[in-house]
Image (cartoon, rainbow, N blue to C red; front, side, top):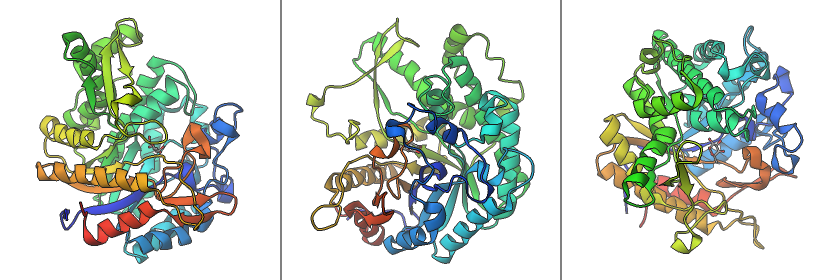
Length: 449
Ligand code: FCB
């Protein structure tokens, strides 16, 4: 039996646009994901978040379900356009009330609320003014954060500013496969910088209000390995690590952007003059914890002619490593590597795994239950990997599984199922999968290996 530290926090995670539905309820404004998903051809099967898991109306039942599993913390995001339908201005009290009821409901069951302020549903009104590519959005974000701090700051112990700036930045503004669907490298770098600026302003405001909780950020990180030991592949892997990891860690934890990447980007898009002199000290305002979203490793080879000078190598399925139903390799030891590396390079900052999980298609069998044995094995492997990191001295404080329930998986719509709970969309029935019971037992008894 592997025991986790007594105060280790076990949680589940979701985000607003992926589960809430009720897209027009109680004065909610339009978000960039409403606009994106309603544009024909951008989301698989034409799916939208209009109804999703109808969590906005079913949150009480969902809290009961969490409580029945013994979940200790729930990471969810607030939809900015529910609070400020136009992105700025007067607070929409009805939208805010939803989150007050949700927080009260969680606390009543002894579940710690963990709020993500931004999980990608930017008010469309702000996008119309340039969105994250516009520096002003960082200041609007800090205003929005301030409203939530004042309303919920004394009740909510864990806050995350921005979810996955790499994904929001590059998938949304360079590759165009996420909202707002733009395709320009320079725009994505500006957008990412302004997300960091918003983060720094929001952390500073958190401190100024003297709130009792903890505040951090939740980047996605990819443990990165060279394809071979050749100097060219190693250099390529180092740069790719800069692209996915160091660019998202150094500003926050060291107060500087990595110089090799500054040089590379400057070469490609011109001077990064959206970075102002005083921004970095603000962005590096001390955080209480680092959130880590982990899904995949990346193997990198040199490829001078490709985009930024490297290529992502997709190992053949014959390498024998099991995969999720999205084809992602299941590589729990890379999580241990990643956590140890964070400690080695960035010091003893407390860490929460704020997301980790897998898509497996399993649905109800003849007995009506969902025997997602591969997800159980996946969780087992990753929990053990987290435990190994703790044993190696990493200051890991908790683990949030992605996701509490099946939901709207962005451009892939409802075709992907990351949940511990199965959602039957036509009836909105929730069926806990075997993995949900597995998590319950790990929380209760520890990890039996
Ligand atoms: C992460 C996102 C989350 C979910 C998982 C599968 O990149 O933060 O919303 O889509 O991937």
